[in-house]
Length: 286
Image (cartoon, rainbow, N blue to C red; front, side, top):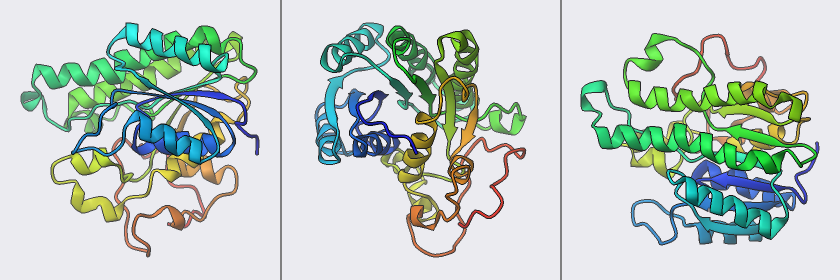
């Protein structure tokens, strides 16, 4: 398997959860990791700051640059990217991980929450990608990875929480569009989504969700799947919508029991937006 040694990885929302797990996995290869997130001061409700994430990256063997960045602000995005380039000399990989969620129906979704989801998930992803692309063009194997679901227009995915679904699917649509727009530049644009719930602080903050954590997997499964994608040839692997277990199975990893939050063989809860056309790979355990 290829390595991310010496690569510079720009990750939005990497102060905790899946973003931090991806950062630590890249760091184990010796990558440079830009932690671009809002949290500079400890939050009693959500653990982790850009500085604690940077410490974790360096403890794992990488170099870290913590940057305060609210991706709703295009100026802050441009400043964060400029700092990354000034510190590490360029950007090889962009991971659009930052996201906002509200599993509310249409009548229960107020304007403030709607705007937050679309400004972070859709608009933020667009402008983070846009800011990184000029630097990615100079990389030998450039990748953009959006943590968003496969595109499937099943109405069942939209009806319960239309605003959130549209915001997340916008990330996937941008990946599809940009994969074609920048194909000649050799920049890969792909998406990655978990088959099961992933135990993050954000999941536990959703009302009523803390009770299902034992039916989830750890963020490490997404980090390992992301590593597989980000070390592939960007010119031959682009425009793909990926599910974590399918990615791992493609490189021979079929025993996923080590990713469970709670050991055993109990049922795991499927995440949102899993198409019927993308079943678990044959032979995958747990």
